[in-house]
Length: 122
Image (cartoon, rainbow, N blue to C red):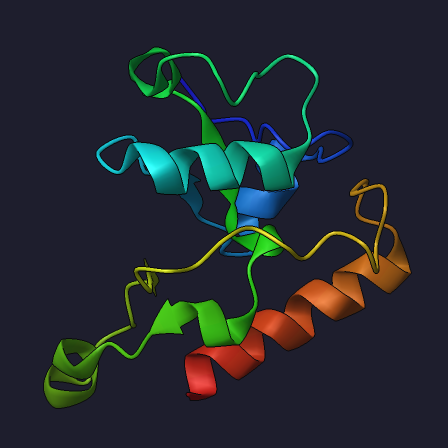
């Protein structure tokens, strides 16, 4: 089953996946951080007061994080392989204000490509 991003207005799974977008699960092992994510996402279907165990299948795509939200993958550098995107412990989804509807317009594609290039260069 393909993952879907739970951020309102984020669409285009197939194209996103082909561009290297990854999906992050909510941090359900850290209830306070999970509530922070839910508050930031502002999806009316999710309530930050609901037990976090109900959100184990909820995903947020990498388009909603900045390059600074990711840890450096030293293993990938040492082995000269593609880096695996790992979020830092305090990362919270925040990047959707500059591209309100993710239907992959030309402008959005450019922003996404620039983010991915920056992430892979770091």
